[in-house]
Image (tube, rainbow, N blue to C red):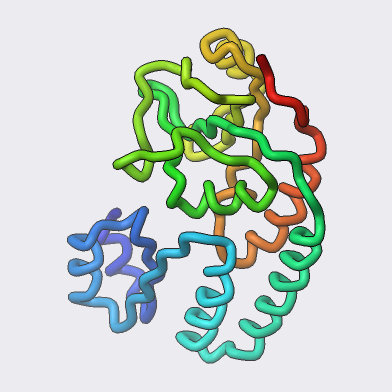
Length: 200
């Protein structure tokens, strides 16, 4: 975080996320930013709180309620459907390989679509993996962010994991806020493209 650049902009508000910004950074910003908005969504439903939190901060309560209505409508449509259960390794980084723990926004979003992330238990929110030979995995989801995985990585990942690998749009799984509405629709379509049977 470049505090000098932020100070030069003289913002009245700064939006922070607990996973992305340290307390030290927040304390430094508080010295010259009048309003800090701290967010930490852990599930798709937390977007409703987020919309209202930001709407209240900027005097846009009506717009926030409109977002809430759109999100709830999309979520209701998704929850009416039944998706096959699949255990997935969700990769977010290479060198070292990294994944997500079950208590993250990403994992809880994927779970709506029957995609259960492994490992099932982890002390770190974003665990490092010594290799890709993770037991109990049906397939590997390879995120386009924060590491810029592309189709060219899939062959290597399939070879190392012994499982099918599928590129997934990381913005649609991890960007909470207004993007989450499109994310629900995207993941609904994406889940339909995946194999439904557990791999041997």
